[in-house]
Amino acid sequence: MHLGMPELLEFYRAHRQEPALVLATITATEGSTYRKTGAMLLASADGGFAGLISGGCLEGDLMHHVRRVFETGEALTVDYDMSAGDDLVWNLGLGCDGVIHLLLQRLERNAGLAVLEQIDRAHRERKAVLLAVVSDPAAAPRGALGLVDAGGATAGDSILSGLLERHAKPWPDWRTRVVKSGPGVGPALLVHVPAPTRVLICGAGPDALPLARILDELGWELVVADHRAEFARPDRFPRRCEVVHTRPRALAEQVPVEQFDAALIMSHHLENDAEYLRRLAQSPPRYIGLLGPAARKERLREMADCPSLSLHGPAGLDIGSELPASIALSIAAEMHAVLNGRDGRSLEVMNDV
Image: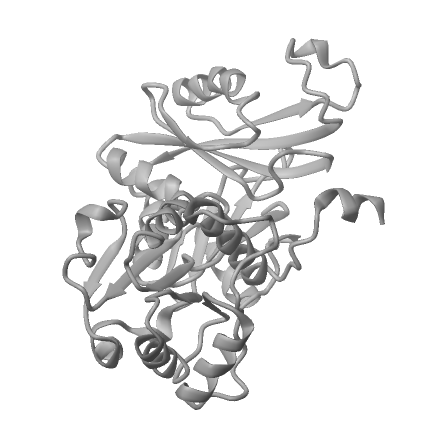
């Protein structure tokens, strides 16, 4: 779960020359809310923003508070309570029955913006980040921000950075946590920002296009490999997608296969698919999907000599898919579920349990 970080970082890169930006962070939630603790929104002085703290229903009102933070420079806490049932106080009719607590802080050069710069650098290097922010209105210094990445680099408040270094050993598997900061510093919210999800698609045929678009929309990093020059063309795929023209046997020479979280093999050629699988088996990602029936999966397993390798084939969830777009949707959903440790069940069924 990347908390919308790819969108925030793209926005930051476009506005990194500005003297200040405002970061809004959900520091706590109660009841049912669209976004959870740790979700962020980044705003510029001209009213532009990236990220969401709701389904789009609170952002308009939030911008009024953002302008105040730009004007005063002071960190600000904002609460949205939709639990009353008649949320006419917001004139929104949300019906979410939840409460959102937010911290807004102005990030300036050589201070908070240095933390964003380090997050950007860590993501480019595929390193996870641990972020700390003091959010308690009664605590000091409210709005202090610190960071440590998985490589040990730090940025921001030195006290918080020291705190993060202690909580980064071993590297956490949780998403958020509130901890005591130490003498003279209030409780801090720690937010674990994972390294960007990276996916390899082996095969650039027409049915790879809708899958690439969906994964790009998720903000995942995507590499598409194919030996056919007419298919391995960057102009066919989303702008952020890397397209590699390579033969399956040379895949590992062109692409760092050990860096992927998931892969889908879809060249529609048995021997090529077996070669792709053979290369991936040397350093398997958490998810490997195959097209075609179960018998084809076992045949590929035998040809690639990987009898115990975990494979998803036929790839995807059972949603009645027939056309490339719906097949891509089912594969992306299964991939997302596996990478997040979920089983892909209906939320309605889960709520009834």
